[in-house]
Structure formats: C-alpha cells, structure tokens
Length: 146
Image 1: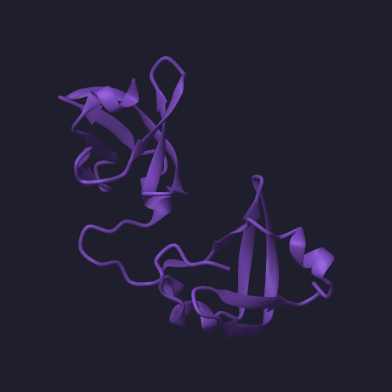
Image 2 (image 1 turned 90 degrees about the vertical axis):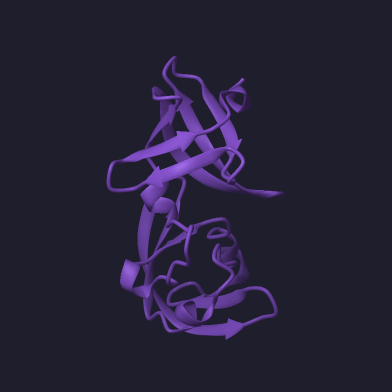
C-alpha cells in the first residue's frame, strides 16, 4: 500500500483496518506488515493467495484519527475535505465530492450547482481559506472549473 501522507510508521503499528473499495467497506485483521522503499506490504488474515490480494488492489485504508499521521500546517485529512461547500468571491459554486491523487498533486472533485463535476488542483494558487469548522473552502480562480 502507498500512504497519501508519505509516512508509514503509524501504519506499521495497525492491528486491523477497514478497506473501502467501490463504496463497499470491509473489516480486515492485519497479520503482518513489511516496509518497502516507498510503500508498505500488508498481509491480511484470510487473504492467502496473490489472486485474493489482487482483488483488494486500489482499496482505501480507513483508520481512526488517533491512528492517522499527524497533520502539518496547511494539511487536511481527505475525509474532512469531502462535502465542503466551495465558494468563489462569496458565491457558492459547488461541493467537494472527493480528493484524488493526480500527477502534480491532489485534485478535488467538485460537483457544481448545475450537477456537473469538475476536477481542480488542490493547491494554494487555486484555494484560499479552507475552514473545516464552517464547512467551506474558498476557490480563488473560478476559471479552473470551466
């Protein structure tokens, strides 16, 4: 598995995890972890063949905040960004549906008010204040949604 934060120490200590794939979640007990150069190999109880393991490829690890890597200044947990309202110049333009990793960093998937979906780079050039408590994110450049 590959960590979105780039940190693995906290993941090596996990005893169990929920995996989410295609909107389905399932609990797994972790039997063993092995640190690799830029990832972590995980052996789940009951997943005993390469074919069974391949079925889990692409799944998200869902862990508690207590088990997650601590945030640095300006960082957010993906779960906190999901469903934030997006405003530009004081006007609501949509809602964040998800965060995905792109070649140049994170992209937020935004559902516009007309129902269309767009991706925008989640970078300082495009997003200003992100206020989790007020459930809103400030988009600085509306043209990025065109």
